[in-house]
Image 1 (cartoon, rainbow, N blue to C red):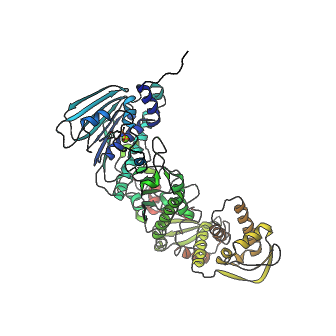
Image 2: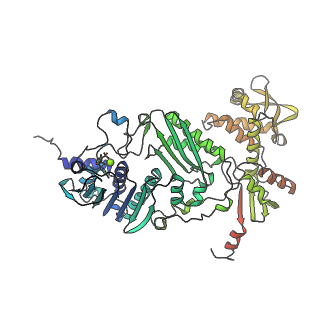
Image 3: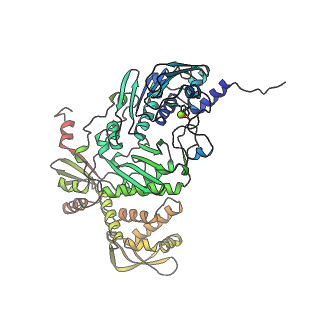
Length: 567
Ligand code: ADP
Ligand code: MG
């Protein structure tokens, strides 16, 4: 008995569709990408019931001839590549020729299209991969695709759809990506006959970010650029206060295509190093343009991933560009901008599926050194031997004394080592210390780094060292024990490979060890001195691990908390 038989074309398409069209948002993605590839300047998307009932995408792109419209639903029909070589020179978003065939095999689809030069347009329909009809019709120039009853032909797949709200949420997120990757294109989104947003065409990236996320976010972005012969990186990184606990605000576009890439996302995070807490993810939008021959786009059916020929080079470019953007800024004042002046354009979206899409991104208050100075903080008291209570004309402030002093020391040590100044304190008597085998090796291997930060450690036979000087601050605190513990902690972390950059870790540890501790009682002059130091220290509002070191209760906050005003 024969068991093998060929599958029908219809079934083959439906199986293939499973890969490409995972959910309504995938269909929207394919259709919008086609519109962008067709050179549209205005794209309008309407969805009903999370796209399951209806998706309609209308563009003003080049349209199709009657012959092309008839072919568009065929599997592997594309105008975008012709040869294998083309596959490595992709400049369009689509190229696999699968999208319309896939969508046509699992829904009722009507395509209306007309080229500007044609008098009559074409209307083509398909239903569940069958009954293709093609006939002339009157229509605007450009293309309109109407998709009804997605997955109604594949009930097994339909069962996997989440609530209408969730499906709509994916569509919304997708359009945000499309809108950010193509700021020159106008995008309109309608959900169940309600307008969600209408982004004008010809915006630049910053304007688009402002329209989508509000002024507070746009104002907290630092521009980033990097150029090399075959590679251009542009976009923004958000100041640390925009960082969030998820990767939702990490936008990466490669040749106009939104993709995810853990390595590049890591590169940006690394550039922030001590400016962010470990579990926080920076806000960024990177627009990478590179020679299409240097990136493989054909590695994922829905094209969410790409493969770079030289990923190391990409990592370095992105890391360098982000670091440069951050270093250039020193975080200029955003004091008055904590609450966005412009409310984002789509209240409906924010209050439905994408609750908090805009609200959660309100920055925490942050302070540049100049602002701390302008506040003219006066210390009032210390509580729990740990926090300094201070006042200014703007309100009440609490300072975490350890975090603040750690940052001050960190900045001081770094500056001194860069300028090759010494931050050394000679000890009255040299101290013999036993560093142990690993500690001794570490100190020998990284002697330059130890010297740079003010340690003077001379080998004294075996694992014994002579400690003659320590970085300023450490001399007050049992220097021998401090150094021994520091070296042993550092070599532990080194062994566990928890240390990526030894110099950086040594700096952080040195800053931390010599800093005022939680629980140290401070006198009024000591508190004044610390505040004075903060006024001169970049990023004094965060400790080197990224935790805030100062929090504020403005009089406005206080009035609203005591219900003296309503807002
Ligand atoms: P691909 O985009 O991978 O080429 P699709 O199945 O998405 O495959 O589309 C098939 C072809 O139909 C495209 O190559 C293009 O020539 C044409 N087409 C699809 N949508 C549009 C549109 N909105 N405007 C103009 N042409 C389109
Ligand atoms: Mg396509």
